[in-house]
Image 1 (cartoon, rainbow, N blue to C red):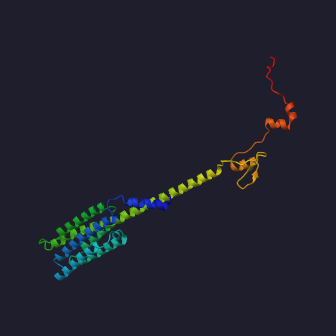
Image 2 (cartoon, helix red, strand yellow; image 1 turned 45 degrees about the vertical axis):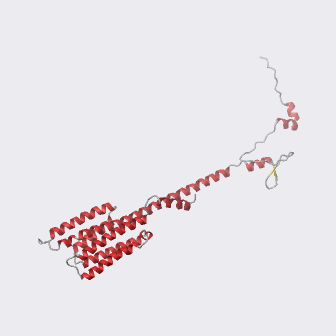
Length: 287
């Protein structure tokens, strides 16, 4: 089987092993995370005590965020499978979250530091579970710093604690994005290994075919009816030429000849030799 045919039969089979298509899974996961991000950001913007916008402007921004989620729902599944779309979504959410945090009036250096530490964890961790655990620990530590660092009146503490769910949801979003990229890389690496194995198998098959062809070329057999002269015993070949029987057999087989004279021909050609040679007797020699 050719290599291209093997790939055409193998790759679709592997894709059909799962019950849910990859694009549908990515789309549903990211839409859910995007919805949570928008809800938390809207809550952060609308209920912040130190917002930089008027109430009407806040509603306008919140409405724009909701319309963004509705627009993302219109994209088909195959678009969600591409790296450029997910990368653009991650960059857009990073910029949007940073901008909303700034507009809410809670843009402290500690928040941005924790936020970008979560992004760094998403890029450096090996699994989604590991990233989530480390992000929860980081967010919990940041919450304790906010709690114990607040004044005795605890004015504005509730607004600051709203940063924690924002960080956790963004951590889940970044972790899911990084996990999808890692999964796609593993699939590509597995496909490359599979193609390499198929190429090696194809080369091995071709090598065996060449060996068999060489072996068959060295095996010569005589089959069918041979037109032979009844007088001189020459054999006619496929081209119509008459050849000595020895020459013909050598050309069409691996046999060779060792010439001699049979007893009948010896008698005809050398009658004196026959009479001079001792004949066997049935008498038993005397003891």
